[in-house]
Image 1 (cartoon, rainbow, N blue to C red):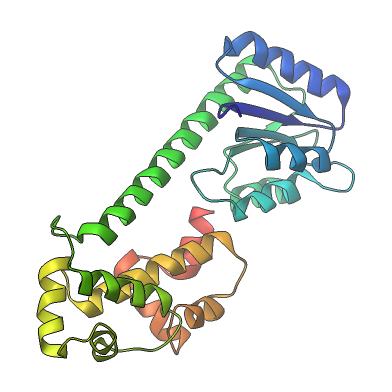
Image 2: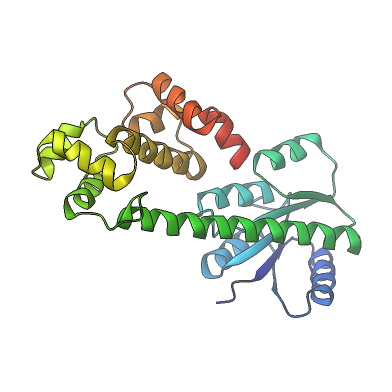
Length: 259
């Protein structure tokens, strides 16, 4: 499986061929250039291969380029390709929707070589940075579960408590509940948890809930109220307040600016 694939999707054979030839001449073998005649064929390629960049026409039969771009939001961020939309029409509605979908560029046909290559290089750089951040976050999460913020190995009790927290983020629970689960006195557990994790039990639970909420905001179409409930908040208002306190923006703004 080639991790460096550029996929061109257009129902016009001339456009597919022209873009493919320009990119083949530019890329020097660094990327595999694939082409699809419609959105359905493109989805098949996306399921089988790791696509780094998707260049797709907006208007196509059955599955439009906008719909194709929208489906990619469900992919893990580090695997999601960057997107360039192309169109024969300069319509504000298309451009506005492209921005909402996090599209890197919106090019009008006919597309010149210089403009195409400039957009492609910018999009690939964005995709690589997103993949790098995604890989880094996975490593941090894995290390946090093993050593906490202090960098020291976690005791079995604290590690079991972390598993309990993750299994019950959608439910209301207290530090006493977690202490009971790991068979420790609550006062002792509170001190032990802070010593090994570098933060209080309450702060850690808040961070994990907001982390899961951010993931849902980017990968699902659930409402903010539904997400709040699924990460253990009894009111959307309180959830929004905590989200803004920790993330510096509202849940809605985070979703719109990150997607």
